[in-house]
Length: 225
Image (cartoon, rainbow, N blue to C red):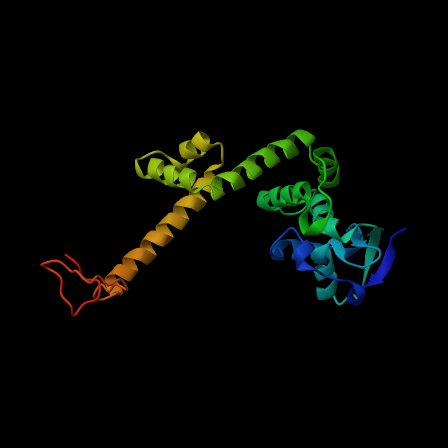
């Protein structure tokens, strides 16, 4: 049987919540049927909420001090993965980017923890091993692409020549989202350079040459022919 736990004893940690905001419509629906809602899920040792943010908020707005609770025993470095697995099965869709980052972090061994195999990751998240493999190939390949300046410059060149971001992504084996990120960075740098050129005033150089040539002017260091 679920326990009735004081809401004030629960730990709401945004870093282990796979969503970014509460859904007001869901909260209002839950307020009308508190007794029918399933128990929330918390880590037994730390009382960190793994599933049930909207149910907790609905109880609070109805003036309830306790909420029905089930317990899990989960290592802290798996809190977000467990929370994703629980939240992905109901309510609002969970952002796929959150899922993908969890998979990569577990595969690489984030925060000093041992890297995990694809099968174990799939079991924790409740997704297929094939999907985990696909995401790892895509994202780790994208990380290599984003760090390769020659490839990113070529990707920008192809995009500026008229190729769609999707086709550029296919060329380099990455998603359109990664090409879009590269293009945004390029556009931002270009705008900053243009702004600097508009506002810099006279060109100045820190380099001086003894022989300036016939067109040099000694009043301007570095002004060579």
